Length: 354
DNA sequence: AAGCTGTCCAACCGCCTTACC
DNA sequence: AGGTAAGGCGGTTGGACAGCT
Image (cartoon, rainbow, N blue to C red):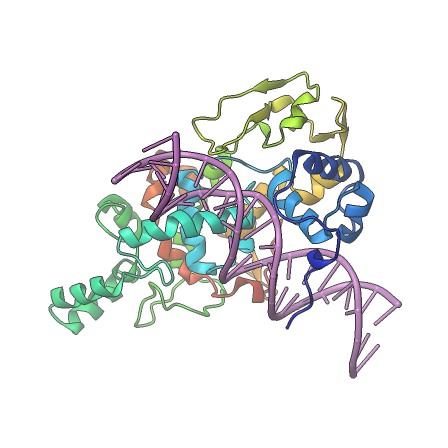
């Protein structure tokens, strides 16, 4: 038996948050910042536990949240990150700006798992489902031939996502002609898509880098510049010069009324006191989320980095810089490439150079 | 229109880790 | 060193909603 839930304390509200509660919490956080969550309910006049307040803020009220449907790029990225990280939603969420772990988790459970299954991919292992593996075995002429093939095409053979639909020959060729470089990367788990005969050269990581980066870039580019809230109808009474009612039918699944604050507000990196006056809030700007740090996140995944204190060779990232026309090939990504990363990135000391 | 069913997602639960005393 | 509180995270639940019969 664990510790009793903090929400079991008497007089504490549970369940859905009312707009009034949202406003109280939002006003409190934007005014005082994030401090001790356990004291927030009392200070904000809420009959909630601190944990509930924290969750509400992180998953819903944070102004940096990106609402609406996941883009194809985000979808691809989630799949690939999941292949590496598993159900570590919080870690996955760090690579999707504006998305919460809860949101990603829900999206995975409700949509992506089904989609992968429909494609004949086991969402847990990211390998072909057993029935398909059996079918593959029938089609194989010999085990020897398989080994030969895998040694020549170390990842494609075992790739869960390698199929005619998503891998055009051009991208495949491009993949196979990648330069080789060695970095001291922890090779902890290569059960998915890794060359069974030990072809563990770092070109795979480079591929990972090269294929994922454009997707990330695209994801970041697509981040809505608007600063928006949903399901906070009472907030509409605030006065913003640039507030406008916006139709998000193109990209929003919100069932509630939606407000959008345009660029002017977001660019100010400011928060509101509820009266249309914006004051810079360091908490929002720096702690909760910093758009300026997006690049840092990307670099942390793909740029110069250190593993357990050992600096990598600087990765040549010219692929997406020189090969801009191929950016549309983002969808031809190779999800398996990330399997060259450590199974447990959290246990690895990454000293990223910013 | 009413009832049923499936889907989505916000929120809770319980466990683990960390910080502090 | 041990106890406690708080934060963080992943799994799960239940209500709201949409679609179908």
